[in-house]
Image (cartoon, rainbow, N blue to C red; front, side):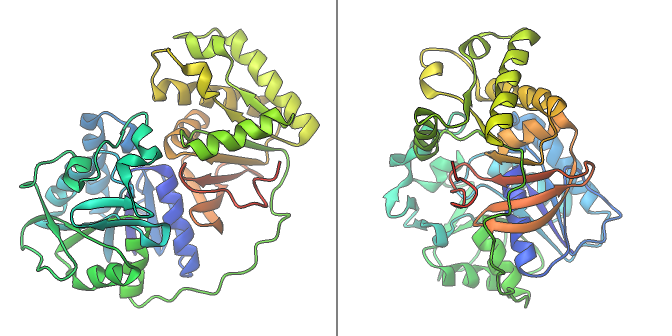
Length: 385
């Protein structure tokens, strides 16, 4: 068994989709199932959005539980652009697993995400000059890897692809090509904890002798109605796409200003909002829940507060209508929703596109959950408004 500890729900789903590509039996859960018979067991935590102290306690618990299982490999899934409590969490895993070294390779050249000469680039542009600079919780203000990790140079070893790896500590591997990923995966031994993004996970599977299966065609009639989209991304491309749909009369429901501004909005405000969303579902068969960026200007409000409000209205909508497809953008938003709905176990059934994974909610009949990271794109046959 390969076990993955993910710090984000969409990252967990992304690796689940990769597991399907490699013909693995995949189980995704929010806690460790010590009786799991899966080839690939992925623990989907939400520690990236937690305060660091709570995140480390959660990772301690997960790591202890995984030690009870006979795993062949444990992989730590982190954000490819290093948001979250990356280094402190890896240190917890090393301590609980009795290991002394880790190899962290977050870059994913397939998506134009590379690390070279100690700096992180998105399609050739320093990352702090991209939309990641505006992340509400982990704004990236420098392309220097140590700065992104919030550590000094002595805490991690930055290594080029031809550099020797130290025997102790955490090493960050530079990477500009897929060949670099394969090189790093081949250089790790059984005493090394591997950590990184989806690209490095694929390299790990290849190094284990697994072969990718040919993809089957994805038919454009995959979506089942009614379908509810919940958008939690702050990326400009996502926001502009939603605004275009809204301006053309499409089924977009922005969070009402009264709910945004109130610290504890009364239920009647949520009921009115839920009724609007249900009306859109009835008339269009699908609807988008989002936040108009201009509605939050000049207001002190946390990203956690906004996603919890979205989760509450999703719960109310689900009581009023039998949603068949729930499609969520952004791992933290997805985690808030599944916590609100008490979903804790998922079976990936299809990879609809890069990082876009459709899953069956194990505890609910006839409900599918499709997730994607905020910076990825929906396939055109899904995002069809």
